[in-house]
Image (cartoon, rainbow, N blue to C red; front, side, top):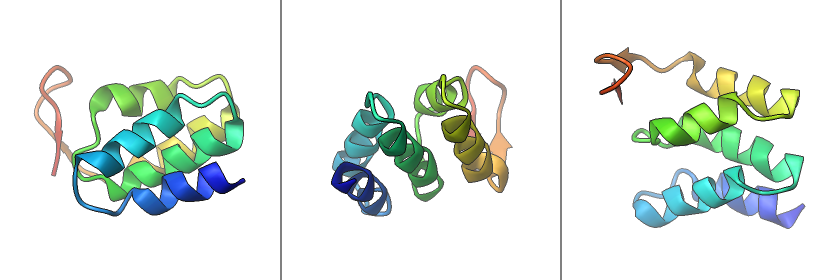
Amino acid sequence: MLAAKAAYLASPIPGDQSRAVVDDAARSQHDQVRVAAAAGIRNLPDAPLDLIDNLLEDSDAGVRKVALRSIGTRQFTGNLHSCSMA
């Protein structure tokens, strides 16, 4: 699916536009596109916590699994209300 590829390939590009592409993909009705968004968050050093949270609570187990793997190697600083990725 072209949309899934586009979402993942946009993720390492610096800037707000790539974040917007991943965010849009995370809201897709297609599971493959949401999986690509979940994989793409590993490339977003400043991924919004609401985006991460939505992917971790997705109805599809594959999306949740990829999201967990994507954030698994990241270190978080701060508390849950003001968390940032280091």
